[in-house]
Length: 190
Ligand code: ADP
Ligand code: MG
Image 1 (cartoon, rainbow, N blue to C red):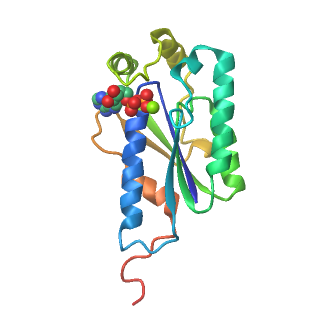
Image 2 (image 1 turned 180 degrees about the vertical axis):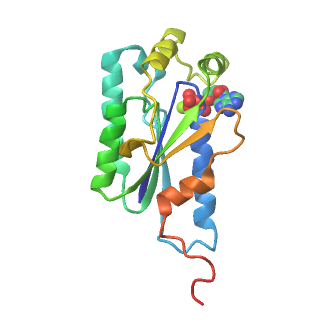
Image 3 (image 1 turned 60 degrees about the vertical axis):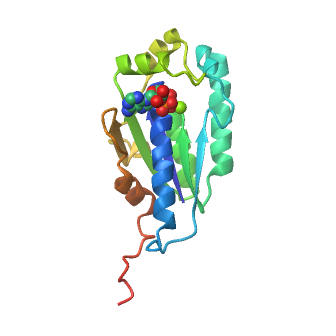
């Protein structure tokens, strides 16, 4: 049905937002007012693929990790699935490749750009305590190479942005982007 690509700096809050999006979509699908097709929400991430943060310290490892992520995306995208891809997704060419795979299956797409300042990312990374912290040099390197999503290119749009100080995700806009046309208003039969 749809593919939601999360993109953002390392330790910018991507997984936090991906979980919020996952919960939001689950609640929408369980709402009795929802009359669209049966859909499941699937969350794919570096962690679910056991890709260690150290993969980003080395370009060969990183390329292999990206390959594994793309293979998993191809395996999981489906007409009955809302797939959330929670990874850095910082390379424009990679986002384009993912977009093409989704469009080939006629899926809807949406990109969520999770924004935090480099200083906040470094601070949150150093305080993680979940064992998923990046090497500080790797963070700087990834921030430098980060290719910002743009609503001007078709593979990044619709583009929704979440700022670090936002309490919540733009749930209704994401819902609109991924399910447009599947929701009938409650009184549509009359
Ligand atoms: P990422 O998936 O981008 O690496 P995470 O969502 O895992 O980032 O968050 C990294 C760390 O930053 C976590 O410890 C998390 O609790 C913290 N964090 C994430 N978003 C925020 C926020 N908006 N404000 C404060 N702390 C945050
Ligand atoms: Mg994460």
